[in-house]
Length: 400
Ligand code: PMT
Image (cartoon, rainbow, N blue to C red; front, side):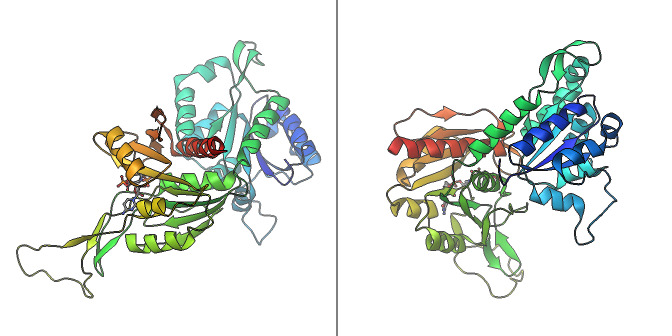
C-alpha cells in the first residue's frame, strides 16, 4: 500500500477501538493514513491514540482550519485513494445515504471522489432493521463498497451479526481492492461520454438525455485501476472525474475529430457517448426568426465514429461500443457488434426503469462474437464500469 493515501473515518461505536488497530496495520503496510473522528467516536477513543499511530493530526472539527491555504475537508477528500468508514454506525450510514453533511466526516464523504468502503458495526437488531438495510443498499447502488459485519457475541450482550471485522480482515479487503486497482497499469484507454449537440442556430441545438455518468464511471474506474485515460466529453450534466485527461467535443463532428486524432496508441476504446446520428444540413449564423406556420429542418448523416474506429482497429486494440435500445435489444446489439467490428457491445435497454440515460444505475448485457450473451443484474454505474473493465481484460487475455 506504499504511496496510497487512506482516509479512515471513525464514528461513535464501541468498535472504534478496533479502528486504532486498523490504522496501525495500514501504516505498517506503508499507507499514508489520515483520520477523521466524529464527536461520538471521541467518547470511546481519544484523538491522541490515532495521532500517535498515524503520526498525523486527527481531524475532528469542520471549523478548525490549521492551514489557511487550504480547506481541510476538500484537501483530505481530494488526496485520498480510498476512504474507509470503520466503524460505520447506523447514524453515519443514514446520513451518508441521505447526503447529509453536518460534521467533518459526513462532509468529507460527500466531497471525496475516492472510492469509499463502509464497515458497519452495531447491535444485531439495529443491523437487521429494514431502514439500515435500505440505507446500505442505497449506498451500494451508488457505488459505495460495504464490508460484511462479522457474527458473534456483541458488546451489547446479544449474539449475532454486527461485529466490525478484525483489523487484519479489513486490511485484506483493502489489499484486494488496491490489487485489483492496478490491473490496467500502463494501458492507454480512450472513453467517450455524454451527448453531442448539433447546432441549429446560435441558441438552439439537437441533443439527447445522456448525462455522462456511464462514461465517467468507466473513465474513473480505468484510471483508478492504473490506466492512462483520455475522456472525450460531449454535453454532460455532471462534472468529469479529476484523475483523467478531459477533451471537450460539442458536436458529433467534433467528437469524430478528437477521437480519430487520438486513436493511435490506444489499447482500449470505449464509446459510451450518445452520438447524434444526424445534424442539421446548415447551421444558421443568426437566431432563426419565426415566420411561417411550418418549418422543415433538413438533417444529414453524421459519421459513425465507432464504425470508423472499428474499421481502423489495430492488432491488439479492444473496441467497446454501447447499444442504447428499446426493442429487440439482443438482435440490434449483435448487428452493431458485427457491423462496427467491435469486440464487445454493452447493450442497455433504455426503456427499463433503472437503466440507461441519466440514472445512477444500469442494466446491461455483454455481447461478444462466439460467446453466449451475458446478462448482468441492475447495478450502480460504477459497478457496471468495473464489470466492463473486467470483461475487457478477459478479452485481452483470451487473445494471448
Ligand atoms: O450518459 P448516461 O446518462 O449515463 O447514459 C448512458 C448511456 C445510455 C448514454 C450509455 O449507456 C449508452 O448506451 N451509450 C450509447 C448511446 C448510443 O448512442 O447508442 P447507439 O445504439 O445509438 O450507438 C451505438 C454505438 O455507436 C455507441 O457506442 C455510440 O457511441 C456509437 N456511435 C453512434 C452513432 C455515431 N454517429 N457514432 C458513434 O460512434
